[in-house]
Length: 214
Image (cartoon, rainbow, N blue to C red; front, side):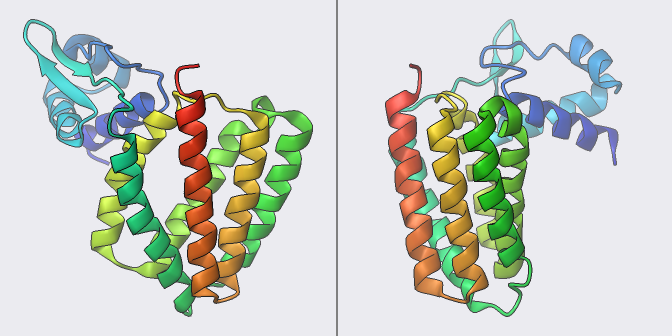
């Protein structure tokens, strides 16, 4: 991996996970030392983050982690519905559905763990599992234009999600909703997969609106 790619990947992850919260100054010297790269590849990484909308240039401060706003939440979810509902429908129509039954089972198991132990026990593994489902759907659909659009969208949605409380009941319900999506795709039922995805997105939007900033 090139040094600039490494720096970009680590900074992007830290921003999405709020290890570098909005308003953090991404000083070149400090970040280059922290990431173990020189300043030239770091500048390339910062330019990519700015292009992604994750950083902004401020006079006298340099690159700063961008703010997260709920002002365009409905717009984000309109695009998310258009892309993810259709992606689930397309994935259920393909012949490459072998892994979805196993994913459905793992989500059901995750819901049980979340119900027993709360988010502190299984929060990050659950989000990784959700990422696996996203990747599996992207691979099944095999449309680079949809995949590219979703990649940028998911980055911003992941940051917005951190504004809402990780309520145990919502996480458990979300796991069951993901299990339904994966199960419908595994069964080769496009309309059921689309409906399950639409229901999940509706519940997710309601939760963020209710709990963000609370």
